[in-house]
Length: 142
Image (cartoon, rainbow, N blue to C red; front, side):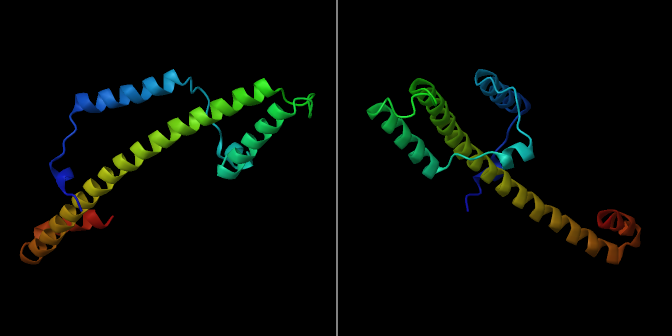
């Protein structure tokens, strides 16, 4: 396990800059709506099999333009597919970044919790010697 995170510091300006950049990404992508959990559940997702399916349909429409010509136009289908692929590429990059940041969060949190538990153990020992600390220990148990 890499413990360099223990020496890592994020100052207020750095944190503000990162949050500002995240908001700029959101603004650049014009992300102004959010799906509800129900909408997400009810919607068909776009996994690898569906990507392959859409690619095959586009290929069929290119080779046979008369097939289902009254249905979706090839141009619109290609446009929607390109937006899908663009969002997928961005999502994968953000997911990689998220995993990396979350790893730092987990490591820092783990170390912080270990140290907090040591303080609690010291407090328990101190309570054996000095009952005046019992109130502090009871506060932790709430």
